[in-house]
Length: 68
Image (cartoon, rainbow, N blue to C red; front, top):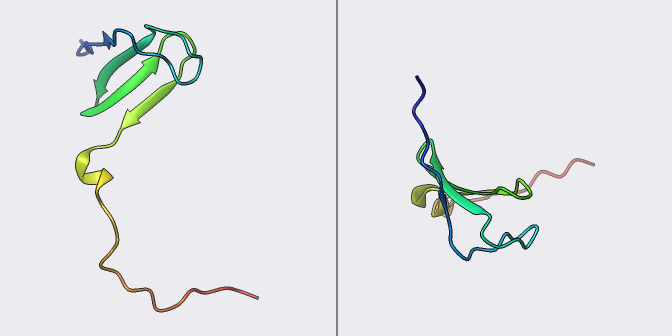
């Protein structure tokens, strides 16, 4: 048996792709929050906070290789 995912519709939400209202559902997949439109199959995922804030500021760039 597979574990059932709980999907919830977001009241009053408008799809950024097809502009339909009340067609956006919110669910979690592998602990990642995802949105999907049931009208046009638009999907979007929310990155986790530690992934979103990650940067490479402590690295130093000596030079950039540009082949001729």
